[in-house]
Length: 318
Length: 174
Image 1 (cartoon, rainbow over the protein chains, first blue to last red):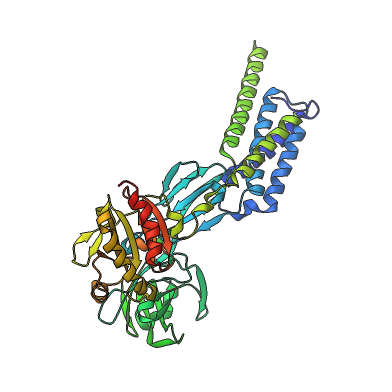
Image 2 (image 1 turned 60 degrees about the horizontal axis):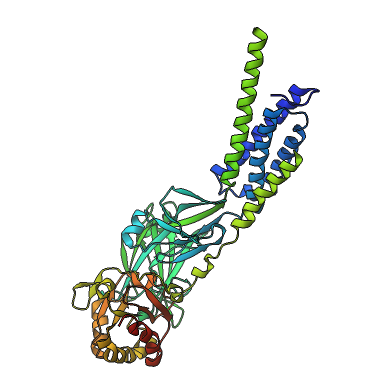
C-alpha cells in the first residue's frame, strides 16, 4: 500500500491514524446513538477534518490505499449525515393502549395495554409498524434499525393507580390533561420541587367523587422525607387529594403509599403499584448499507495492500 | 476520484432526507383514527358476573358504547341507545355498553334506573377505553360483522346519528 511519493511513510501513517480515529467516532455513534454530542458541531467538525485529511491523501495513493481511503470517506460521510441531518434523539413515553407516530422511521409505535402486574414487572413489549407494512416488536434491551434510525426501548417510571369509594366500589380514573383519557397508568412526565427535592409528578381524577389527585414519586433515597410515615428507604408515592370543585386539598387528603399499598384519603381509597413501562428511544444512526460498503472498501484495500506487500517481500527474498 | 467522493457524500446525505419523511401522523388522535382496524377484545365480566367479551358478538354489527354512571352526556345518550337496540336488534345489531372503571353495583344501579336491556359489561381496568383511544366519555365504536371497526366517535350521539352510522353496516352482508 502506497501513499504520496514524497515523505510517503509519515503522510500515510498520519492519514491512517486520522482515518482510524474517524471510523472510531462513527462506530461510537452506531453503538451509543442516543448521546446528544453526535448532533453537536464538534462531532461534525471533527469528521469534516477527517474527510479533508482523507481527501488530501488520495493524491498519489495506489489502488489499495485508494480503496481504503474511499471506504473511510464513505463511513465518515455516513457519520456526518446522521449527525448533522439526522433528527435529535427522541424519547417517546406514551400510555398503554396508545399509538405514537415515528415520522423519522416512517413507522408508528403501538404501546400495549398494561395492568398493575405488567407495570410491576416492567416487561411490556412495544409493537413497531412501518408504513411499508413491515412490523416488529421490541423488548427491553432490544435495538432495531429502520433505515438511518435506531429504535430501542428504555424503562420509564410508571405507576398503576386504582381508586375506590368509601364502600369499596371501583371508580373510573381519568386524565383530562393526557391524550390517554382513561389510563390508570401514570408516567410522571413532569418534575416538581417538593421540600427542596425535584420529584417526578403526575395527576389523575376520579370524576364520580369530584376528586383530583396529585401524585409524587419518591425514590428509595428521596423517601427519607417520609420516614415519619414509615416509608423511609422504600420507593413510594405521595398522594394529595383535591376537591375538583373548590380546588382545595380535602381534610386528611395527603398520604404516602408504598408500592402495592393503599390509603384512605378524604373519602377515597387509593392504591398504587410502582414499576416501569417502556418508552421508545429514536436515534439517528449512520446508514447501515453505507457503513457496510465503507467497511468492505477499507478491509478490501487493507487486504490487497497486505497481499501486495507480502508478494514484494517474497520476490525480494527470491 | 473527487467525483467519486462527491457522489458518495451526496448519496449518504440523500438517505437522511429520504428517511425524515413518513406519513405515520395519520395514526395520531382519538377513536376516529381506528376506522378499518380490527376490533380488539378483552375478556371482562358482565353484570351477571359471567365472563364476556366483544369477541362473543362476532357476526353481529356491534355498537360499543364506553360509558360511566357519573358522566352526564352518557346518561342523556342512553335512551337513544336503548331505542336503537330495540329497533335494529332483529337486523343483527348488538349495543354493548362497556362501563369504564366502575364496580358492578354502580353499573347495575344505572342499568336498572335507565331500564336498559342491552348487554352491559364491566371494564374495571379501562382496557377498552385505552384500546379504543377514548379521549372522553361517552365514546362509541361501530364494528362490522367481520370484526372490523367502521367508525369511532367521541361524544354524545343522537338516535339519528347512531342510525346513520350503523345502517350501512347492517345492510352490508344481509
